[in-house]
Every structure is written in C-alpha cells, then in structure tokens.
Image 1 (tube, rainbow, N blue to C red):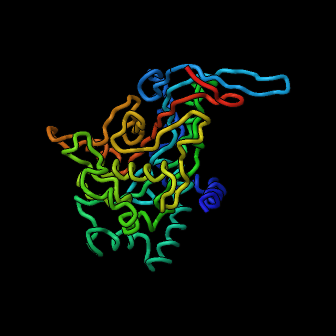
Image 2 (tube, rainbow, N blue to C red):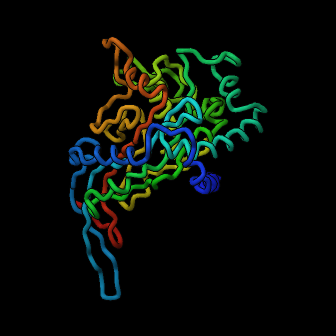
Image 3 (cartoon, one colour):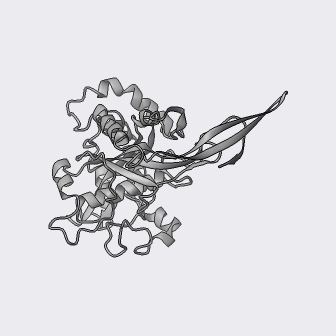
Length: 340
C-alpha cells in the first residue's frame, strides 16, 4: 500500500512544487549541510570512518577456488531525514510538505473518518490522553512526523568509494509518515497492550542521567507530556525512528532494516540514549555540522529550557538527519571464510 501512495505522490510532484507557500528548508540546502557534516573530520564527527581489518572470500569455479579480499570498515551514514511538525502544512522540508504530506493527509483522513467518523483534526483533540475536548496546553504536545530517505546519503556513501559499506536507505523513499499511520499515531491502546513491559517510568525514557527525563518512548504515539517544545519534538522523532528501524510493528511503515548490508555486516536501529550507534544531526531550524549528543541532556542549571532558541526560530517545526552505525565486511565475491 505504501508503494502505491508513494507513486501517487511522485505523479503529483510537478503540480505541487508550485505551491504558494514556500517551506523554509529546501532540498539542496539540506544536502549541503549533510555533506558538510560528513566532510567535517570524516574520521570522527558524524561519518567516523575507519578501516578495521581485512575480510577473506572464496568463490569456486571449474578451475578451483578463487580467493579475494575486502576491507572490514566502521562508518556512519546519514540514512534518513526526520521531520517533526505541528500541522500537515507546516512540514519545514519542501519535499515533505509539497510532495508527500498532501497525499498522506488524504489517506489518513480516510482512515480516521472510517474508524472514528470524524475529521483528523478533531481526532487529534478527542483522542488526546488529557481527555476528549480538552485540547492542548503548554504541558502537552501533539506533532506529526515523517521519516524519508536522505537525498544526500549516496553522495556521502561515495566519500571513500568502494571502500565503504553501502547504505540500506533509498533517497526520497518513505519509511514512516504519521499522517499515513493516522490511527496508530493517535491511539495508544494497541501499543499499551502489546508492550506493557516498556510502560513503567525510566524503562524507555529519553535521558542522559536517569533522573531528569525528556519523555518516554512508549507508547509510540503523537501525544507527549512535555512542556518544552524542542524536547517534545525530539521524543516524537525518536518514537517514529524506533518504529521505522524495527521490523514487526503494528504501525503502517516501510522498515529501514539492519541486516541487509551484506554477509557479516550489520547496522543499528534507532534507540534512545544510544549515541554510540545512532547520531542525530539537526538541520532545521539550526543547522549543525558537528556531532552533539543532545537528546536527553539536563538543563536544570540553565536559565532557559534546552532547545528554546530552536523553538523560537522554527516555531515548533524541526528536521534532523539520522546517521546510523555500519560495521563489518564490504561484501565480496563468493562465501566469507574469515577476517583479521
């Protein structure tokens, strides 16, 4: 189903690209910031590329075995773009707002009207954990999230040519949209029934000290109890990324796998507080090219909430690029027989 919807979205690209409202983040700017982050100390920082050894392969022919070698490498790749926004027409990335979101909103509206017999905006209010008709206040947030294949990932994947593990992401591919996953993103019942062991406090929280928390990952819905907008958006980004990078979910999504980069190679799914394997680069409203482990950071000693400057500039909309850790052998010819 998701492939059919993507096809419809691409067919409407030409017409939608002339939309009157101009999104603040254009695709060329996004790609530039991603490439700059990779070029900024490629052996550390975001890309963190290094050669760790050699892998050995054997291929059998009619003349006997043929041996070959490839490199064993460690790297990060900017697989997907994660957009978080309050309304369907406020996605800050031009590709999301003008090409995909209008199509996905119609699909989501159909689901919500069929299941709840009301408009999606009404459902955002009536399904709030704060109670039907309660609306939202400063302490409670609801946002939508898109996770889309990064258009710059294949450029970064060529920094070391054939000496890099290839990305598992496809540029502009849709891995998750909360507009399309309209019901599950607005209802926590099934999530709570399936994952009761993740619901207690501090079991799956976004935190760096296990005392102060930005919010819980479960249930993975669009409602979050968090007065600071940037923190709320970060929690929702991590919830959607957790869905998109793990198979077997109840949500509507296309899995961004962790085992398809070849034999004896792996990459990591998104997991809160795991900066060693997944890094988030802020692209909008403040472009970063230096890796910072910010999600879950304490601000008890600060004069204003963490991320307040970003909220003031972006008005509640944010874009991050998710860099995932890849490690192992570059795929060779034949069967793997060992490594050093």
